[in-house]
Structures are given as structure tokens and as C-alpha cells.
View 1 (cartoon, rainbow, N blue to C red):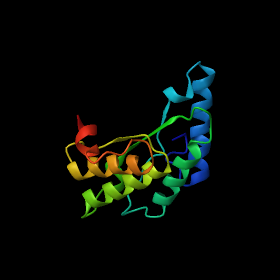
View 2 (cartoon, rainbow, N blue to C red; view 1 turned 120 degrees about the vertical axis):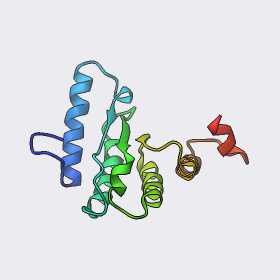
View 3 (cartoon, one colour; view 1 turned 45 degrees about the horizontal axis):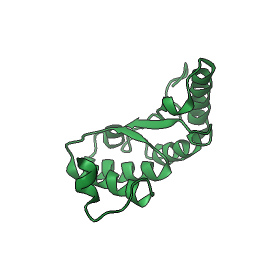
Length: 138
């Protein structure tokens, strides 16, 4: 966010995140120690924002090598919806696919955690084993 408030499109999200990362690096922080938040908006009220957020996440990874971390408040996407758990799961998997590295989420939602673990496996962030869910949970 900036003085104008919540970004309304991909370009503004990328611009704001770039400024934050540049300032952090200027102050001596390594990019991989920075967590950028694309500001997840409620799907029910701003449906067009979901795809913009995913695109912004993808573009944040292009800022530096190593790339910054990307985090979001996951439940924002399902605010005031009927199918919160399903929307959260699907959005998290899509965000992981686009490069999100962390989420503030309900870790007691077993299906959400399993979806995230499986997404990381499919994205080759974890080594496959038949017991990957049980192993990663330990």
C-alpha cells in the first residue's frame, strides 16, 4: 500500500513492492530476507483482483536473485463467502504455483495444509514419497 491506499492493479502492486524491496536492499537486507505482500482482496467484492494478485506474485520473483519471499493473508480472499475453505485452498495452490512462499492461514485446516504440501510437491519444492504428507507434517 502507499498514500493512495490499496493497489488496484498488477502494475501498482509491482511498483509498490519494487520500492519496498529497493529500500530494504538499500538498508543492507538481502532480498531473500524480505517478505512482500501483494495485498489479497475479497473475491466476493473484487473478483477481478484475484488474477491480478497472482500475476503480481509471479512478477515479484523477477526483482532479484535470490528472489524475495511472498506472503499473504489468505483468508482475505474468502471474506464474506459461503465456501471459505474451498476458495482458500484453491487460491493458495494457485498462489504457490505463481511463487508465493508463505501464507498467514489456518494451519488447523487439514485439507488446506494438505493442498499446500501437495502443491509444493508438484512444483518440485519437495521430494516425492508416498508418505510425503505425514513426513512433512512432522
